[in-house]
Length: 324
Image (cartoon, rainbow, N blue to C red; front, top):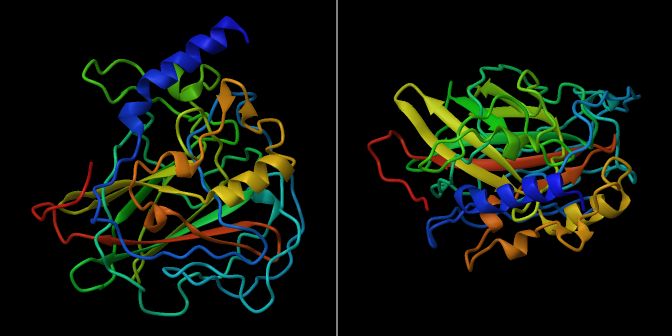
């Protein structure tokens, strides 16, 4: 293994403790079952060492939409079930209008407070209002759909800014990341990008505003991994009174296992080598039930991944929150 890779890997391992999600037992939301019409739901973590930057996405045909995946209790495949094959080549390979609404069934299943998690070292202060955050990079097209409600009365959280960020398929973050999450406040760019992404690239980052039902969605590619973290997505909510939640969400190990041994966009990084091993969600639990923070997923009829998550927020920043 080249020495420069080992240096970058060592830097990542040193910083993993500052970025890991540790939830307070008893504060997590209850019971998000994970179902799937064509595969198990997948677990995710931050990415690893890199290959190329923003790869071009292939075009593709799109069939019509499948019936909805049910959010909260878990997304299922609907009446027609999902495609038998995963789509590849990025978000342009599917019709963005084909995704069903995973929350079409109505009321939220649970309104227990969603716990906070670390901001992490790879956040970037960029204001990118957009649904498709992929910027044309390769990977499994993935829609991440969220519904935000109040923990005290289950009413929708309206007009809140929801920001997400995650790695590319090679486990690298984009953008000008300059806070390593430690007291030194040193530049985290090399750690986050693995030294392979320039600061002007901003893939897998974006912001949307919740609608009248508290819903928001993003189109991305399934993120990659790097040693020490399960594959995950960062999320932050900004309301008029300030940031009311910063947290992280995951994909089930079964889905991640399937993609890294069978999906053409991920085969080059299976994460099963000595010293280069993908961290599974089960290894990051720390004795805490992570199920409420695992996306409910389904494979759509065009072979894309639909990932749904319901969040319950405190009403204002003066209220207590559960966090590490």
